[in-house]
Image 1 (cartoon, rainbow, N blue to C red):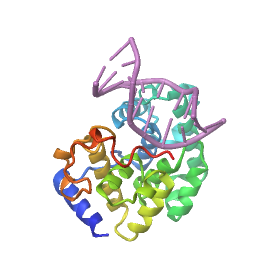
Image 2 (cartoon, chains in turn yellow, green, brown):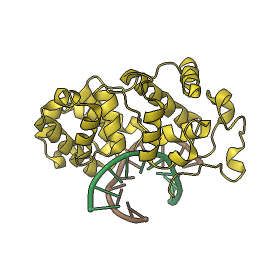
Image 3 (cartoon, chains in turn brown, blue, red):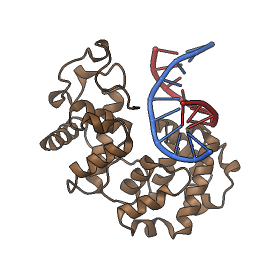
Image 4 (cartoon, chains in turn cyan, yellow, orange):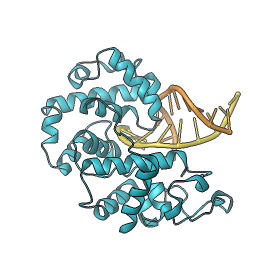
Amino acid sequence: MPEVEALYALLLDRLGPQGWWPAETAEEMIVGAVLTQAVAWHNACRAIMELRRAGLLRLDALAVCDASQLAPLVRSAGYFNVKARKLVALARHITAVGGVPALAALPAAEARAELLGVYGVGPETADAIVCYALGKPVMVADAYARRVLGRVGILPQAQQASYASARQWLMQALDGRGDAAWFGEFHALLVAVGKHWCRPTEPRCVECPALRICAQGCRAEWEKQGDGPDRHGAS
DNA sequence: ATCCAGGTAG
DNA sequence: CTACCCGGAT
């Protein structure tokens, strides 16, 4: 899979290190992972600042909160009632099992399973936490990563649709490729590409930093010829 | 003024 | 499948 190395190097060269995850501490990263679910980072960021202002960017503090008191603070992140409950549930759970260090002491697969058992933590959030907060080399196969890797021609069409299949394929293909920082940077670069150029509709192929090695070649007209081969996943 | 993108739970 | 919800884009 030489294309992966080529893509990684190309994006790093063009875009520079993305500096993800933007958090001071592992606990802050975990809070951010919940808040950014289904919402642009910008919105989650405002909620994080509210929590910081209230001294609640720590799991032990969040663990003793009531969701109802949290909701107004995380309003800007959307789904605020749901997310307030998720934050409390996750903070309580992690605190109860001995905190982030205890989680980080587990093998990646066990930490992931542990997290998946918590209300509000699905596959993507679990992987993000395992990679960025626990420092394990796992791939976050989110919508951006799947779309970009799929279009570029690295991730086979059949694996693009679901999170689980994409993750499984990528974890095998990328096995041993790097440490947590490598995976984290790769994911961050893919998000940057997916957000600014490789958009769901009206992709900006001509200016895309990955154009040189993209299977879509120079087809800027993508969307105009009846919506590429990959229309969003559900099948 | 409407549309939309995004992940998880039910 | 729909509910949850925001802010940003159109």
